[in-house]
Image 1 (cartoon, rainbow, N blue to C red):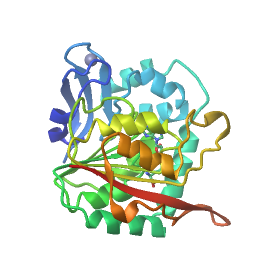
Image 2: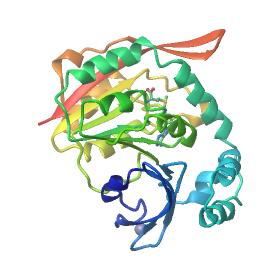
Image 3: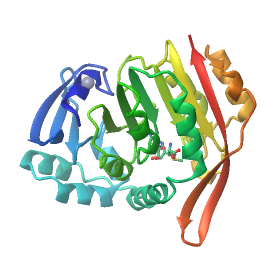
Image 4: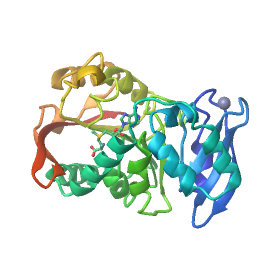
Length: 288
Ligand SMILES: C[S@@+](CC[C@H](N)C(=O)[O-])C[C@H]1O[C@@H](n2cnc3c(N)ncnc32)[C@H](O)[C@@H]1O
Ligand SMILES: [Zn+2]
């Protein structure tokens, strides 16, 4: 975590400012603890990544394997005992699933989709503050840092951000967090991205929450509308026309170049013999 990121972060439970205790620091903070000044909730920083989850034990309860890895990874005694004491609950484990998908994204970063998205992003005016929700291994986040002032990526997968963090830039930082939690309080962004997350994060709730993060600026969204996910499906799926209607209702103008739904190939290499071939819709909306 960059020291400079502290001023932007807020407690996800009560919205107060956070205090930083650094245990290990190199070019950036490698290990440390963020603590809410008001409600005293603690958020560990492990392997340069702050985990801004409302309840760290809860985060680890569905990631026991990751919990074991984090326990082995940390050096500072304070952080070791914090991870250990959070390792008591147990649910279905997401660690291997999140690691597997991080590798799939690594093997798929040359998909035409990312090329098309980067081309569209390069045509936008340079922004002061950028946020990407569900940024995974940071393919677009990292690209955005080359032409914008300060860029943040959020994802609930520690494994994905661990890969993203391999590209150090002084204006680029990542946080493990739930996109629906107010990690940045009421901070306003000039550019927000949500690429291919609408079938995983309740779409109308996410759109509303992101709308509050933009008073003046751009919102870039893509999605394959692959909502059929069994018990994990979102409650209120949307489609290409509902997405545009929702954005308009929230006060956005959909740019004329993206008014018509598009079908950009997004190929995810699952293994050497199988590829998932999506055709994704792409929208740029603006509040001015
Ligand atoms: C389908 S992937 C898309 C990754 C990336 N945006 C892209 O298009 O290459 C969805 C990503 O969203 C993350 N994610 C899912 N639910 C989330 C939540 N509630 N908060 C933050 N990230 C979430 C997942 O960990 C995953 O990395
Ligand atoms: Zn608090």
